[in-house]
Image (cartoon, rainbow, N blue to C red; front, top):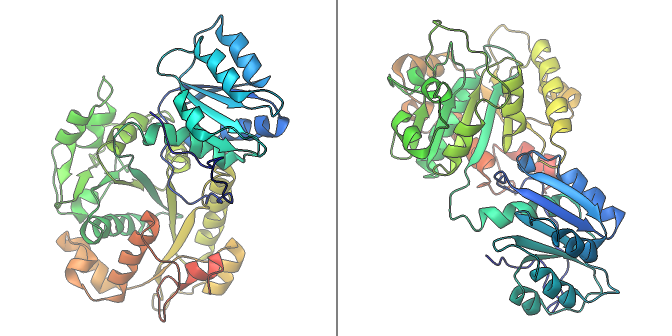
Length: 422
């Protein structure tokens, strides 16, 4: 129940910056009530409440600190989480002792302390405090604090969701998604699943040489909420660490969904899979937008032409605005160097988009065509090719397993330049 403190008052340390690209698992449906002393803390919690990872949390903010909390819970039940900002002029220990008389068992308590607080952390732990954060706090501090209460205590795998989408139809986003997922499973030995969300025309089954009788449609049209046992039955095994939730790829019905239609499937798979790769079709609807915004990482696949340039810029801008506390979405260029095709210069493309691609995948019709027709991955046909190494490095980059310090000839040098690493 008790988590490690961020800053121990008995052992002062310099505050550590929280990187936006660190993986933070989302919270389940919980209620959070915050009692603040300052407008700065209130604003940070308000901003955090809009973050995708706290999308299922019901967050209420009140001013008045510890005294207001004690007054409130004399007549109301306590929520799942209480956040308390301390006032240096009052005793934190006395306040927690009084709060304990009105606090329900199982409620998790987070204390936001002032830099001048002298209370010993062991005294806070003794009184049931789950986490202690020294203010002033930022939005990402609040997000990490609330999420860690559950990811650290529930003893489940909180899988990382990676959404891959094409800037334009036919750019090879599905091929990129399937190869990246395959290398995550084989080279990083991560338990991974590919979800083919292109219900009518999905190609994941063909690319992995699978013909499952069931798939994502069986889960989405299930009358009850899908559980782990159901998902295990629906997954097709592609390798020791890779599974597939295939699309029906039929035109027998129209596949219109609400924005949150796939949330239950994603939440269930997060508990058993380390990585979930979403093969998102090139369309803009409520559910595709929601799937992209709520993913942990996003990769846009584009080709070097004008339509792709416009769409990539629009996608990156929209998604970045919708995810202010996340790492910006990434993009790669595919089928670069196609003979006799006029292409936009890569430097011009990057300048217009205002970021560099994390990879440029060369055009190779024979290699990709053979793989597609044989139901194989690129690494199975050309294990030592540059394209295979690109997919390996993309997999490492998207799962946080890559060393961003560039080596001579590194294929991820654009990432290092983007992050200012020398």
